Amino acid sequence: MMDHMKEHFSRKYAPNTRETVRREAVHEFQQLGLIVRNPNDPSRAVNSPKNRFMSTDPVLHLIRSYGNTSWIRSLERYLSHAPALSNLRPSERDMVLIPVTLPGGKSVKLSAGGQNDLLKKIIEEFCSRFAPGGVVLHLGDAERKQLHLDTAYLERLGLTFDEHGHKGAGVAILLHALPKEGEVPNADLARAVTRQARFTANPSWHTKS
Image (cartoon, rainbow, N blue to C red; front, top):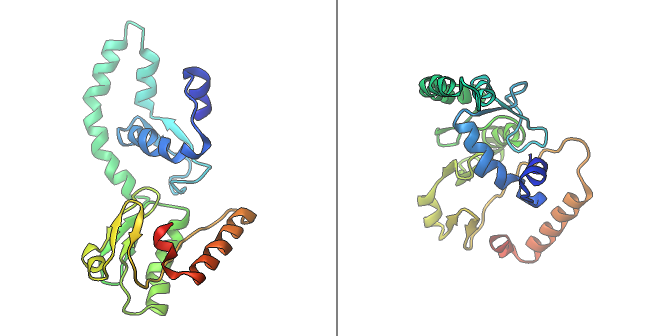
């Protein structure tokens, strides 16, 4: 998609802006029902490099009629059905969401696929076994960064939280779910070792990076 925009619209995007393009453009098209994501595998992770998007049949029919005598009639027909389609989208999305029960009993839903299957196991199995009585302060995924945020508890710890993460001093168990298809790249391994060394030398370092 980014290559297409570069070739046909002379708009070049850096490789590290893929997530921004997905969140600020593709996601909006999906919410409006103009496209569907992974019709062959709806459970594929939101941030999977294998993601595929396809125009819905009504939109494709509408686009093909543009410039023809049937354009106005096709547009009116599409707009008359668009509200009905939007009413279907929430239930369609809920079908592939992953329900997760937090330690306190609150239920949230993660987007399907990828690391979120692992996040569910961390919350429901790891925490109950290795951190009984613990509290999940923040939970998010690629689709919704702040799906769950216990601001009251964070304030009691002297921590604040914004879209970039935690800020403050304290002790916390930080869990990052990172599944990989195939071998883990050496760069990721090196980054993990570096972060571990820095945290060991200065436990407050993670609040600054």
